[in-house]
Length: 467
Image (cartoon, rainbow, N blue to C red):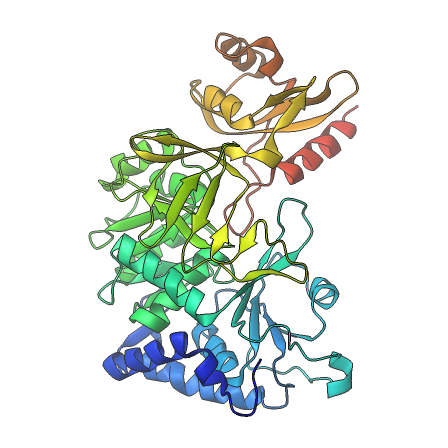
């Protein structure tokens, strides 16, 4: 644990020392830009802002956990630096995460920062409870819902965050000469590892944008001259459907957060002249695999292991991850058989091919149809190949006769009975969806993900309201 002889700077040197080197190299250069191309922070501005924010945090009891919910604010790098230097633990919260009730139930000493400048009145020390001495080396806590939907956090040291940054930048070829375009949430593991730490440790500037409309994003990419764009498949689909200015400087687009289907990849390449690179990672361990070719040679393929990451198959169709970026463990309840000691066992099912790893679903997503396990991805691939289908997600609902039955939520210009007739040419009867729910668009979270559990709840609410 931190003592009077141990400074926070020493505990987090793996992050703070590279930042000092970045600052020495690039002090007066642009670090954070707005979507109109204007510079909102130089690297020296970030350092100055970090010290200003540190003064606002001076009354906060030592070794506190600070939940940060400030969206894609340009102040993110400075606030993280200020918290590191003070020895506090940062807990990023997305805009769609309910604060602070969850945090108070999870952690005994938590302050929520939801706006800057910081205007919160810190409670006196006794109100915070006992010190977080059981998190001596933790620099960051990443929020995850896990397979149960119950919120918990993952503990990361500075060295683990630095290792993930190195894996991302070195494997993807991202350097100080690039400009990242940041619309994915900075509070999510994907955004933090691809935007925040590369700026601090490698001097990679980024655009801080809250834009959610594809047209605004396309215009922002053109105005800023961004070279690297991490996003989600649904966003790339929308961009590919837009007419707009050329993007001569954009050289690398990274797709993560959900499976990338070939139709989206092909449409994007036809529009912009190069393919999307699939990226597979997890909050617990950062980057896992990456398609270095941008060719999407097989549906669901996420490429080869990231540099510095070792992947080994297990007998149950799952995989085991080993790397220096794997988190310390879960908090407040450990799960050492899943996470810890440099090893993580995700719930994803993976197939191995000559082109790399192919995601084949998650154990928790399987639908129990009369005692037979149905992987919804198998049904989705069949339906996605039918003309007129743009997006499809399959989920299970309770059935008195068969335990569960599959339902397909579909976006596209299709007729539901005709869709089922076409699917019956390929799928066995027990795998056919009981219903096809046609919707204008799928509900996407701010992380670019679709929750099958949430979609099933919406479907049941929808059907119960029908006459």
